[in-house]
Image 1 (cartoon, chains in turn yellow, orange):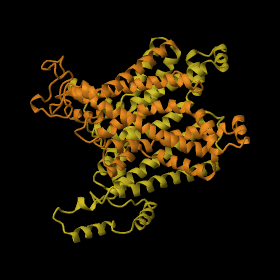
Image 2 (cartoon, one colour):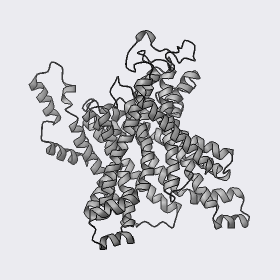
Image 3 (tube, chains in turn purple, red):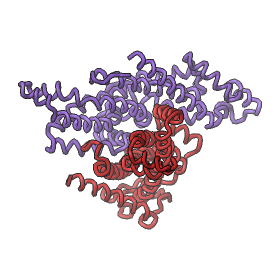
Image 4 (spheres, one colour):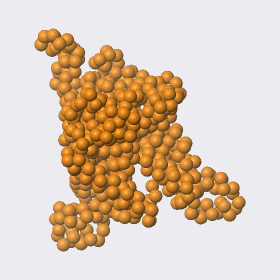
Length: 307
Length: 278
């Protein structure tokens, strides 16, 4: 267990380092942000001066060494636009806005998936099952941002502003973006739980449980569901990564003040420190989720040994 | 099984019809998809009050015919979807074969690279790369293609790891077949079925990714029509022209749904080990 954790930790550090390094060089290929900062009338000397102030006139490899040195201390430099520490800006947008959105979507997509998946499995081949299959197919085939726009059209425009179309600050603001983000993972989870339940319900221990007189609810939720939940844990981990990615575009649709929108806006402005800090947080969260998923496996299935 | 076949046929039909409509777009379309006509701006669909028969699905804010733009947009979605998956598939299968067959350091390095890439939010990566390269159909294909290789590489590598221990490979080796022969003649045909299934679903996902990037203004440059860019325009006129945001989305939904249905059928037909009913 200890060796496993250590190895996974090293691997995680490597992955985060790799991501940050790629982004460092990639953003520098996009061009020089200096020209966005100086006046149109600035002379060559003034431009050179600003560039030197930003440290962008030095050789790339020196810039990189400095960047890594500062980054391990948590210092990602100051935003070129706002002159504030980039990491602080990213964290302000990450917490609470992006976390709120992702957590709400995760909650919706897992909590709703359990009863829907179980009903689908226990009503196999009947109306509820077919309805759930058709709904899943549709939800998994539409772009989340379009679903978002349609939700705005329905709830904010057609129904006369039943729910706000954009912005944040209240639970009402959270509903539409969270639903748009949760739809596709929810559909996937329902199908997974259904498939898992169908497989598990045929096993001997389920028959045994029934034979010894366990109530049907108990059979389904205590005996079967626990075993059917394993693939859901993996997929939920993956879909959390998907949600962070999806949050980038959903945040843009709903003008949600999260980290994804911050990064999207930083790219055309070539705000290198903000992009780097943002992607670093993204990678860190993603790697952490994967680790937690592996650990959860041992809780859900004690037969799984981590080596 | 019968039900599934009906669905698969319906899905295939949607895909084929879309391909035909896209191919014939210049002939079929009632109007020039990029010609402005400000007098006709925001004409609603023909069955709504104020609509006209010459613009069956209405016009956008510059008076361009929505139906014509949808048909031309289909060309972008299909071209990017199929080409990007082809790029990703070729790179991924080649690297997966080599990685699984030779193992060792090369294998380690490639799989680590894949881990790094999977920790990226693809959309952010694509945004950054497209900001460097500029927005165009070719660049979209490159970005979405190159970022997609790891899925194929992992699957192929896994298959190769088990296949390489099989008798027919040992036999080929004993007969003195060179590595390249074994990889191309013996291993490649065996990894193709699972790859075909994954590739089909990838086309669907890539079409959505293309729409997302075009929606963010990083896809096909204006005024060339693409479904994602049309949705971006439509979003801003949601109170005055609901049809602008509705139809391009329905088009994406139908095409992606069609491809997914074909993928479901392929999975059942080609890869009996994968679970059914998902």
